[in-house]
Image (tube, rainbow, N blue to C red; front, side, top):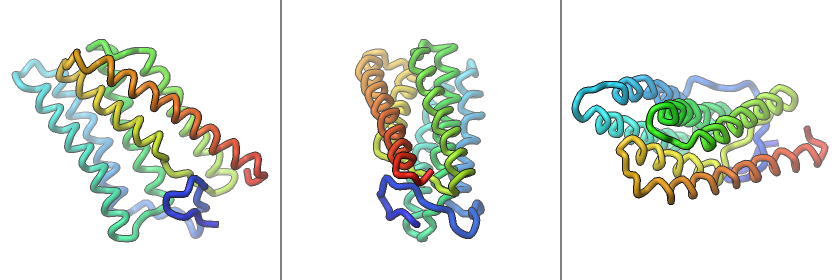
Amino acid sequence: MKATHGSSDPERVEGGVRWATLPNALSAIRMVFLVPILWLLESPAPKSDEWATVLLVVAGLSDLLDGWLARRRSAISPSGKVVDPLADKVLLGGLIVYLAATRGFPIWLVGLVILRDALLIGGAWLFFRREQVVFSADWTGKLTTFFLGLLTLAHILQWKSAYPALTVAASVMLALSYISYGSRAWRWRSAGRA
């Protein structure tokens, strides 16, 4: 069984997982961006926060580029459905933990993001191990990443007027992602396929 593009059903992995693709390499590079961004945020040098923001925007653009390349080269793969969201989790997760410790990012929101990501990674591992299937990110996950990214930028640049609206938007999308991913996993199991 192979899910159609855009389907909420998981995709069965057939013939092994192909990790060495250009979109996956871009996703992996996105994770590495965390190190120089954190270094810049810790630096007392003038404009270091602005440079950190530039790197964060470049990382975000690489996320769009790897998806575009995967579609353009017909390289959408089960491995990409793992590596791409994992890169987002590493980059944004590391940043929000740092910002919670240093710049007032809401610690409760960090806790909920980390809990959701731990559940997603654990659940994905179990589904892959038992059934050789992978779930793709859905719109709730993508919008959660988008609003968390904007909230992260607001904290780096200290746009305090944007904090309330972006915190609400990120929280609502995070709650919807809990519901969406949980219901997808439940439906799959209830249908007797897991």
